[in-house]
Length: 457
Image (cartoon, rainbow, N blue to C red; front, side):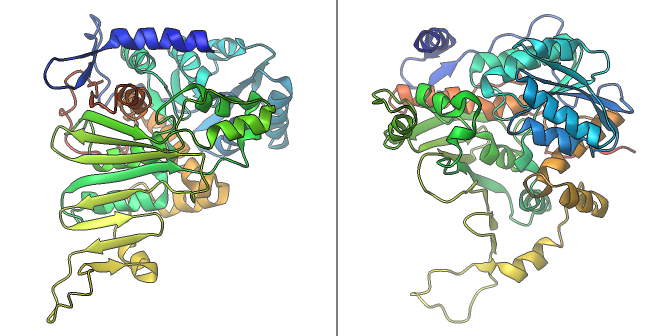
């Protein structure tokens, strides 16, 4: 592990530099290889019945197989896991539903057989984080569209590899960011697009989740090991993705600068010692990591990562506009400008009009997101998956593939949301210095104005 970290550090050192005088660390943006075009609003040939191959059948993959088996316009064509018992468990589930799929298992390269399977159109990747990118790259090289669980990539090099391979092969590479499809986020986005909050100028997101009860559930303890070996925001996309959509990132604006700060690792070593019985003298990740970003149009984002303290679960999700505010955590509320009061009480510091509870529900009901049809909402709530948002994500992906439409989240979303991991580490290891966020679209970030969903005519 230490040797691999030294290699990663050496590669990173080659990929960024600091311009004298301004203190900003600049990351390399490689030229687009000859013959490649960007994937902005890319439309693939329609696939009437998408054959899905699921790789990784553990904590997330097993439930994905069950959920995907209900998505119209698709079928489970193949399943794969290095552990035969997990592959058999999913095969048994499909059999109980009168379905069958090709099964690949027994080796760490079994995924290659699935990617080469002609019945597979989409490789759906739910492995541990380390295997996300190798499977995705092989899938695209094999002529398949790919969808990766989060975080989809952990390094800048991995982000660029995915971008370049997607552009060269003309295959979709989608990040499976389910939080973009939660009901509050979907409705708040619709309200923002309707101008309810004025212009969105600041946003906040987070992954604050006490993982104390879960560390032992991860295959070979990989997630705690990852926190021990790496520093930075290792899981940024749940809080970051939805607010990037509200800020129209690479759809009229782009991220330009990042600054990160973290606490010392107070709790991390205790978790390692409790599991191993040995002293832990080297734990890289701080208990809390905070990252701030600025956009080309002068807007800002704050994101947090905290999986090591007892702080209650929160993705923050806050939108701050020139005329209003929306927040999901710690409780849902929307604040708009009040019409003014006849008598101002200087001891009452709140002058905004606040919507909570039933009043909030009534207000938000007026701004339904266009993808939330009554039929889809009912289906999502019945099938489930984090309250239904997982199913909505899967449904939208398959719907777009069925109809040859651009996906809601493209390979540039993946790269922009995931690059925070390495960029935050670079900032932290250089005294919280500002770091330039690379333009993964290589100049195409303002060709489309405003985030939107595609629909069949």
